[in-house]
Image (tube, rainbow, N blue to C red; front, side, top):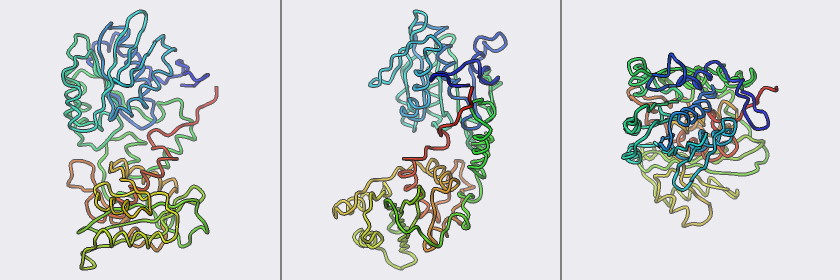
Length: 425
């Protein structure tokens, strides 16, 4: 799959990608109800799914409605719509996007169809797709969507000849989509294709080697091998004190930031960070456990500790536990530090921290004893049916997650959307 003058050379697709493009018109598979593609990240699933979905709809329908779904509208536009528009001329498609009303009008050979964009981020999202009649639907990142949304989306496809298109990276082996759709693909009359990194011909051997060194444990099994695997043991098995804990710090830093996990009965953990040479160092920390100390502290007392932690440094931002509304207001009222609530997607944040550790983007000073302790104790919850860490020894872990999500995502994209070198023609 080689880019030439900004366009993709279609002759260079892998055999598995070509199956995605052709299944709906081939004699042996065109009567299937739909297709499921899963596997490793960056294995070439998403682009061929979106282009094939648009081509199938344009060839088989006119003046019909279709659905394109992702976890959020933003991810739909980034992962599906932008590549679709960029390469539409290669297919003879004319695409007009209405960003206000979240739909695309796609014209091919004199016929037009409308593609509605939906985000399935939580249980309430199911109501967004109720009432519409669809001739087909594409669900990208389907394993990240709630079951109620997916089932409602599938129920909307009541037009004769409608088909279902599913695309995802693996989660745990007990995930409802694995149990109800992948394991039952044959009985549901669906095609199931599993993708490996080698199924994406745009990945050079060097890039594939890079991916194989970025993760360990369950995330390696899922992202690199494409396996539906349970998480177990330490959350950050990649953390190595010999690599990530430093006894000395750089002489100067280009900027500073603070991350806060706030607690009253539970511990409060604040981390002071400094950036030097593209690496963020946890310079020092404030960790107050009211149970250990025998008394709780007020917002003002925690704020005084924040000022002491920062000293005379110019802090660019304090990113704070989003549930700590009173403490955020306390920081604002004093007017010394800019403050913002943190993004709190736990699994996404854990993946980002794992990525940052693997790439050497964060280091911990040896004085941050509670952080180092929590890294060794932070565990996955074996009793949970969903991927979740145990809610113990997680306060420094939470503030680090807030920090990495806010600051390292500015320059280091998530693993699943990292830009790649391409082979030369």
